[in-house]
Image 1 (cartoon, rainbow, N blue to C red):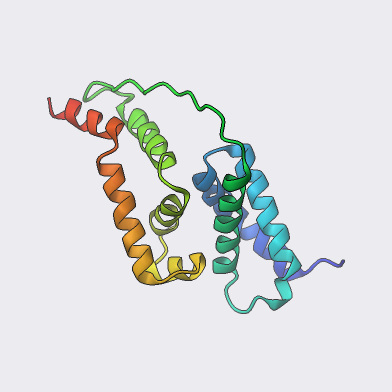
Image 2 (cartoon, rainbow, N blue to C red):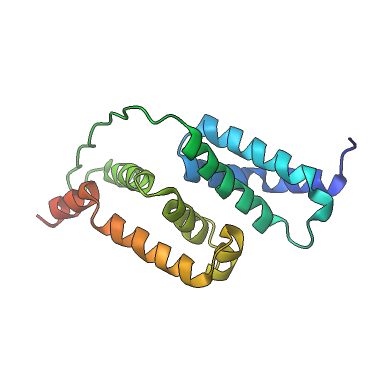
Length: 166
């Protein structure tokens, strides 16, 4: 199989951003690297058939492959400590807030997490996310709404907000 220059240029240019997306989807660096590599191999196999911008196609591969891997992966006991809440004005509070957000994002169902990652971290439009995920724009809106509602009532985030107000 011969190398395709357009594909090589795409991989060189987009890999860092795609790796970040893969990490946000699966929340594990090694798994994100595997996920990206798998997605890029799948994209390479049908590169000649992709017309126009390949980003939606590759993002869709990332989302679908991650969902497939989650269904197949054994989910044993996942023991985690609840992070300590930093005092307001503490120098580590921004890092703690970021860690709480990552943990809360990880507790969302994969489809809701994918919608938030594509919509807010990748800054894609609702129609672009719908195209990538193979659903309607209304589904993207409802999944976004449900995901944000779950984040609002997440017990760790709620405890942090309550502690900051007191």
